[in-house]
Length: 490
Image 1 (tube, rainbow, N blue to C red):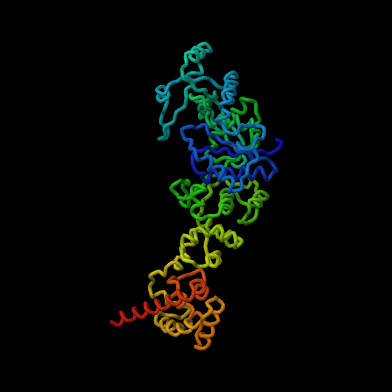
Image 2: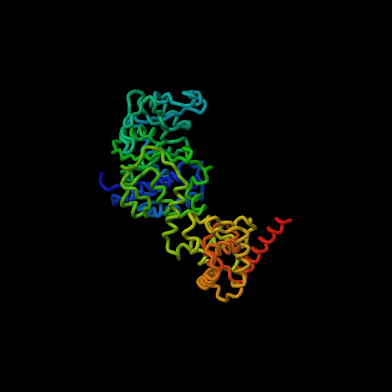
């Protein structure tokens, strides 16, 4: 079989589904692991489902994920065009369909919609239609007469009705299908365009594709593909069928899940490299227990023979964990660059966003978590005085009120509101009073943030808020606690 050549052949019909991204990724990894070529081919023969902007989505997604093709519509490799509609205009598919007709492996079918509807039957509660080969028995003269008269037609594959067709899949092993189940599928539609199945086989052969990666929903179609390869006398490529991807409830991943496409995940604050890493593990496992891989490391480690037959579960919790690991390991400058839009959306006041970013970097899993961690900088929330109670710090609302009253003059007198200077001032106060650090810092942090958890300690937050805002919030905390006890006593 020579040089390994794989392809990703998406249809421009919408966003990049996670299943499609996995197909592209596995095809890329198989080629690059063997030092081969990865080809991008656009399958736009289904004109009714064509979406204009979908082509841009495909190119953009491939670029952002790093799945760069060696050949494609924008990169000629000697076997183009790489867009099926352009290939159709050159008559490639009809010429090959005609070859099959000449060999008796295909035939013209002139049956109208009404007759085809009459062939439908219900089997096990499912409506199916198996063509009865009616037009196969037309004489050559009858066919020529209908063609000359302009009677609409399709070209069908001529499959046997007896025996079995078998093939070897790299993941699922030997698959056998009873030929009685093989319909005479349409190769060329009445509009002159090839069907997805036929164009795939012709293009894969002409482009020298050696390994075909696709979802296991195509397992049942593979015998039809193989019969086409055999009819032409072509070498059958290696099949790699990927397992189904399901949600946590073990149902097929759907658009309603909210994370069915690559663009959905990016919009939800996930990193492209984390998504690629996660998708690689949806059906494939490395030989060790490692989970974090760069794209180049995936190229080196990927062996499709270690793929699973069982459905892969799209575990959002695991994806968030993995994304968080990427964020923690990221250079601070790049983290800030990516986080800046989320920071600016949550905080419009003139605080030091770079310092705020440094506080949240190790605490978030996705960028959309940022707002929930820092919204108190923009405005102090209305909080319950119960937040002042902390068992470990041995604080209560009552002790917190006393501490805030005592520390307020110290903080008012403090000129330097840098974190180190503030911490030193509080530490001196703690030592003088004989308190524990947390006994004092917890009430301060609660007063300046109004939150149970924050991305930084009390003095770090005060440095960012500045003296005026910090003192204002501490005074509000005192007033809130005083009001609480006044209302309790009445």
